[in-house]
Length: 477
Image 1 (cartoon, helix red, strand yellow):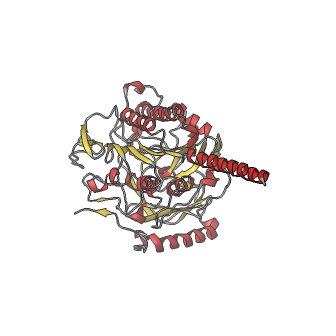
Image 2: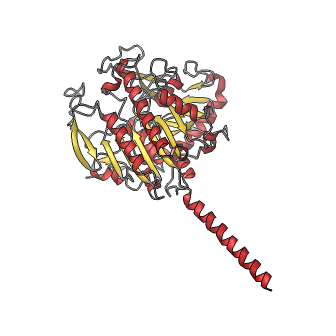
Image 3: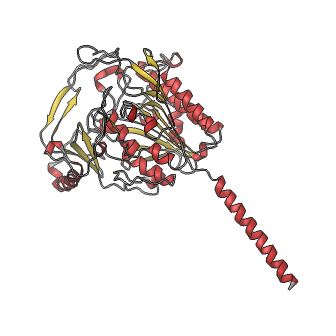
C-alpha cells in the first residue's frame, strides 16, 4: 500500500511538472511580428532581382535570397488610395467605396466600420504603427489612429499635393503639405530630402521598443512618387539618375529594418513583406520607374500598371531563394496574415483568400479562380484567369507616341479607346502584344461568365451596373 501511494505521488508530481513546463513553453511562443514595407509608384523592374541592372538594391536582393519573390503579384488597383485600401482591408477597393487618389480636404475616407490589418491585429494583442503615407482620408475621423494604428509619423496624402506642384495654379491649388505625429501636425514640408531617413528611424525605434510584444509595422514610403527627394548619403549614387538614387535609399531603409530585427533576435519570428502600390508614373519620364517588359504603367489595368515586385521573408517558415509564378493579389495579404497570426477575420465580406500555401511552395494553384482589375470609379477593365489576361473595351491612357516629361515635369498622356475584347497568353506573351481572342473563344466565354458574376456583386459602370454588395466610404458633412 505504501509503495502504491508513493508511486501515485511520483506520477502526480511529474505529470504536474510536465503540464507546467508545457504551459510555460506555450507562454514563451510569441505570435509572429508583421512588417509591411510599401513603396509608391515603383515599377516592376526597379529592384535588382526583378531585372534592374542600373540600380543597386543589395538588401532587397538578399531579402529575396533569404525568402520568396512573387513574379505575378498584383496591386489591388493602379492608383494610390484604392491600392492602399485593398491591401489594408482584403477587399477590392470598389467594394468599400474607395476610388482613385483622394485629394486634400476630402470629405470621404475609409469607413470606420471597415476592419484594417491594424485593427485586426490590435484586437489580437499587437502593437501597431504606420510611418509614411496614409492616403485614405485626411479628415480627423479617417486618420490612421482612428483605424487601428497606435502610432503614426508621416503625411496624409501624396507628396506632390503641395504648393510646389509643377501644375500649381493652372490645374491645382494645393495648400501646405502637413507632417503628422499621431494626430498633431508638427511641421509643413518644403523639403522632403530627410523624410525617408526619418521614416526609417521611427521604424527602427518602434522595433526596439516593442521587441517583447508582437507588433505590426506598416512602412508606406512616399517615395518614389514624384517629386523625388533623396538625402545626401545617396545623391548621385545610381546609374539611373535621381530616381535610382531614391530606390537605393529605400533599399537602405529595408536593410536598417532587417538589421534591427536581427539585433533584437526577432528575425526568425517576423514576416517581412516588400511591395509597391502600383506601377510607374510614366508621364514623368526620367523621374518615373520602369515596368518593362510589361505594358503601360500607373493608371491602367495593363500588366505594367498593377504587376509589382513582391518579396517575403520569414526564415524557417518560407523557403529561401524561391521564385513563385502563381498569381497573387494585394487583397490576399489580409487573410493570409490573419491565418498565420491566428487573428479573427472581419464579419463583413472580403475578397482576398489565404495564399500561405502558395508562399511556402506547398501549392502551385491560386485559391482564387480569377482576379479582377477595376479602375476609375467602378469600371471593370480586365480579368486574369490562370495564364490568360482578358481586357474589356474601355478607354486608357498611354505615353506611347508621346513626349515624356523630364526632371520633375510631366508629359501629356494620349487617350486610347480599346474597342473590342482582347485576350493575351501571359506565359507566351508577357508584354501583351499578340491578341489571341479569336483563337480562344472558349476562354473568352469562360472569363466573360466570371466577369458577369463579379459584376452582379460589385457592378461595372461601363455596363451601367451598380452592384449589390458594394459598401459606402466614410463621409463627413
